[in-house]
Image (cartoon, rainbow, N blue to C red; front, top):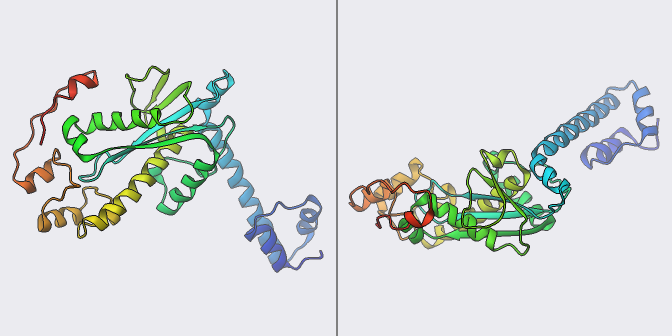
Length: 280
């Protein structure tokens, strides 16, 4: 049939994923053996998946593409991670993708497994025009409250970029203290590739830090649950009490420490009016 056996064809064009030459595809289509049909079916499935992924990526780049077409090359996606855990800092990232950049598999970090996030984080850092990760520590969270801590982390991430952005795409928030045109996108980490990239870097960076905190404060399971309020974490809190990595403005931690509930944080439109909130 060809100079390759079916096993060699399977290795080259399915396992290694090489593009199938038109002349060889014509020969395969004329081959009635089940093995040849299976190889063709696998190749056609991959092509379909690639087309679908291409369409998905075009959709996820629609906000960026509109800005790129206007000549705004430095578009930064911004997102945070770690708002709901009982322990550890809040992380945020800002990512400027080069115009036309496509990273297969990029998505909201919550939809990805740990291995995929790690691999994508590496590719994002390699392909980005600029990226930055920033943290807001537990003591700051307990002083200004978790909402404003998330905003502060995102501001620090933007300010840490090596390239000044021309426009910001932010997951559901606005950074009023930064004088850069910006757009808040609800569920932006699932709609914008730049925001998704930021969500991945923030999540991967925070998870790594929580693994470090696990070695400093053993027994809580930070390496496993990353500080989130899961049953294992509640059990550890009940047995060990709170450690310095715990957020003392969060109800379950205050309860373990025998502290009264905090009054509601003041509702304010500006960050400055919220920084006078109660301290733990």
